[in-house]
Length: 222
Image (cartoon, rainbow, N blue to C red):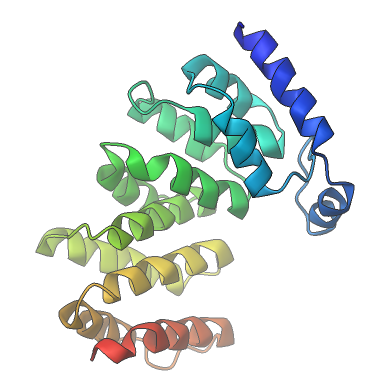
């Protein structure tokens, strides 16, 4: 089948799997896609397994303002044809936390240039681009990737700035990345505690809560 036929087949399966209650709930929470079938993630994985990875198909799916199409795009995009400039185009198009998290999980973390992109994106001023940088870093740190001293210093600077910013999603993503870093060893846990001590009493209660949650997650290593 050509790309047009593949898209038609996918859309048929999405309509058959549509969950109106879930779709309505997402709309009420502000997820205003052009189209949202409300299909649960396990079902989307089943649909993706029925198709071979296909660059043209994935690119076409991503361009649609449809929740399920964007999620499936990350599952069906081949790594070898997903060049850095395409990654930048995709990340600039992300508007919702779910898409950011799933695309980092299904695609971005496997890219050979993922570490470089994580630092590039976390330094960006746009909230969702920055958050993707931290989410990607969290994925890589969870797999045991290590940072040299220079990278660690940059990571800490960017993470602390994000934690203290008014951007809610960037805060959460930076918190996750710092937690993953602190969980690597007693030494990294100590470094994260020292970083948070620089802003021991932030005025914002949300920031205080994030700080405390990070400490609670890693304190057993100390």
